[in-house]
Length: 298
Image (cartoon, rainbow, N blue to C red; front, side, top):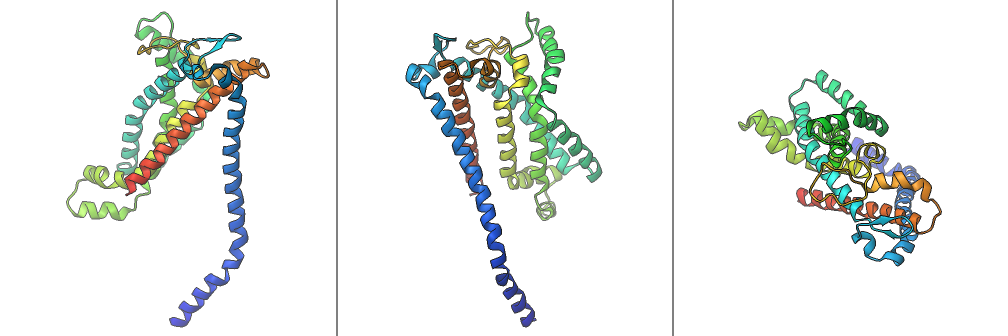
């Protein structure tokens, strides 16, 4: 027994030299990823410097965007936040409830079927959802709320909720299903019902994975371009608290004007400033989610 143990122990260390080149490869891949992310941020910052020098804080606080005259990004920032908040508000309760039911109550065969459908829907291109939005959702919103025009911030938020629902559902379900079965057995042995076990034991253990799923869904909603561009109305104005008017988001603005603004001085720099703003918004969101995950683990 001791000889076998010593032999296995020595084999582990003898193979360490063979693993070192692989570790260097992994380190190189990580370096490429970090360098790419930093390079993207530096590129956006450099391209945005002219508009920052010309407009200063008025670029983020200004409400008017007139090409060749003034560039104010506030209407796009507010539109992005409103559309994303609406999408998350609509999608998260449904996605998390469905993920919990799929993980804890469905049989293995039904679970695999639901997972397959959700993963298929998560991979559908945004343009397909955009066609769904302009042909069905915009018309439904127009008729339901007696509007003159169905392309509104509310329509864009509902469409984004439909788009992020499969992603959040399947990733959250993966996190819940990955909790070891022993936790459930011990909880049920102590007298907890299946629902109590799911809410008090399984969900806390899977919290980091659930937070990751939510962050990915929010990031997808915040960065979606084509589908939102087709249904948001694309008017550069601050909507106030009214979701049933046309508006603009940062990605829809970039998608609409990037091609014509390429190489055109301040206009191009202003669009790069919008891209930098979106980059920082997503970065702050990701950092906050990471800190929350670390706090929940402690």
